[in-house]
Amino acid sequence: MNAQTIRFLVQLAFAFAALFAVVLVPAPYGPSLGFFLLVFGLWLGRRIFRRIASLDEVKADLRQRVDEGP
Image (cartoon, rainbow, N blue to C red; front, side, top):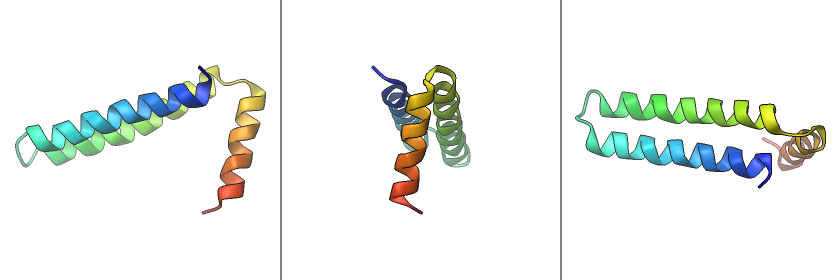
């Protein structure tokens, strides 16, 4: 399992947790908690990727982002 796969799985897990928080937690706190979980998951996935990725994986990820464009 490479670093990009691990990053995707971490971000997916936090996205599902955010979705469940929005659905299950009462109104004023659910969306706030969901937003926090989503942003934290994106940040944590990026940190994990940078920590365990090899230089070649980082270069490939940057090339893919440039090719896809904004």
